[in-house]
Amino acid sequence: MAQPGTAPRIERRLATIMAMNVAGYNRLMGIDEVGTLNALKDHRRERIDPTIARHNGRVFKTTGNGLLVVGQRMLFPRQLRRRGWRSRNGRTISVEIRKDLGWR
Image (cartoon, rainbow, N blue to C red; front, side, top):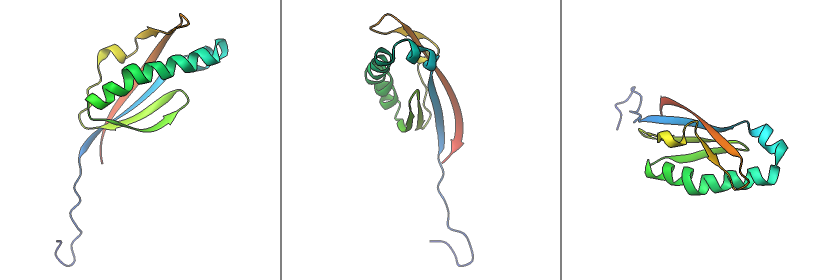
C-alpha cells in the first residue's frame, strides 16, 4: 500500500511487440483472392499460431494482411522471416516481421 501523498507502485514488464504482414498482399489478392486467403489461413494455423504460442505470445490485433503480437522476450524463428512458403495454388507468399521492445 502506498504512503499518503505518494503514487502507487506500478509493476511494468518489458514486452516484445511484433508487427507481421504479407509482402505483396494486394498483388496476390488481385491474382487469386480465394486462393490467397486460404493460403494465409493455412499458414497461420499450421506455422504462425503454434510458433507464437511456443514463445508465450498472443495476437492482439489482426488486419487483412497482418498481425500485431505481444509477448515477453519473443524470439521468432528465422524460417518465418522474409522467407516464402509455397501455397497450394503454387504461389510463393512472404511474411515481413518487425519487432520492437516496450514497457507494458
